[in-house]
Length: 367
Image (cartoon, rainbow, N blue to C red; front, side, top):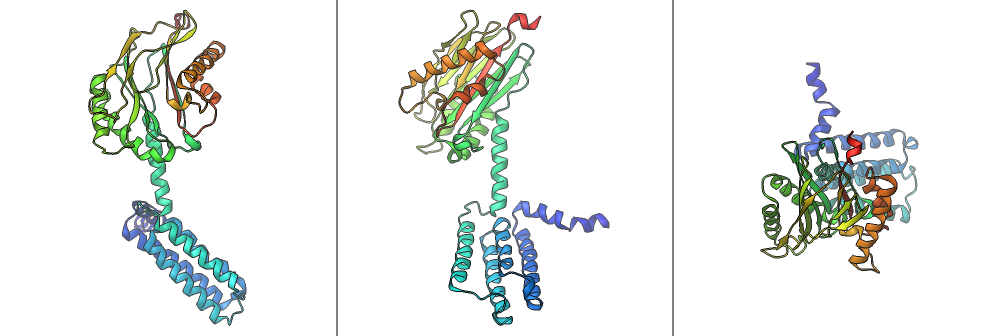
């Protein structure tokens, strides 16, 4: 019996509010109206205890908790409560001047306008919670599974303007304990503007990876983007398939900046020759894959164009810059933490940036 009563308390109301249901909105509105009524009663009997601004705390709270229509009811009730309190106290609460009326009217107008702009139909607070879940899910897609001994895969990403939403993402799959697949994608656009497209595309790739060979996977991803019927849905991508048992790999690129391979014997980054058409541009894209074997101490680096693009230089100059920075970093510090250190050297810009490095430990390190 006690548990049932607690279930009807604030905690239960909060859980219902997270559903965004009409019933929960009515209940939250009722709670806020009770709070507004409490302010009116205090003002009615002891006006000197209550500043006029206290009335407007309730619509401010409602902006976070309520949809547009319930918020309109609450703001209307607030205006009525303020007028009733003012008239009842004979104007003694605090003389309302023209400026007070204008500021109060603007505040109410801004709150209602902001609420009406919520295209999701959810309260501001709940919309933020949903966006946070979408962001977290997108980031979880980029977690590479734990690899067998002797291998290390690290990545680092920075969203445009420092937000948690980006058009750069990766999906990964490890099957049979030694076959690793990774797809690094750069969706057209940047930052929050491409967050929904990136999440949708990541979900599609998450269902394809491991189920199709590399080229068929790329063609299926291309078909998915072509079905979106939008000029802003094209993407570049690079697919890596590597057998961690012997180090053999295959790189399939779709309009993506060329991968770099670290040759431990020469201590330099070499440009990979995999090339292809970007996804979502034409019905039948062309792909030219590359293959090779990663020996102990070797590595592969993948990155998005935000890492190498500069306003005053071309792509080739950007790749040359990246090769030099990455070479010095690996020789000085090794591969551990290299993606983050490389991104730290990239000039701040308005594009998303991502770096992924798959490295094979030197034979001496395994002894």
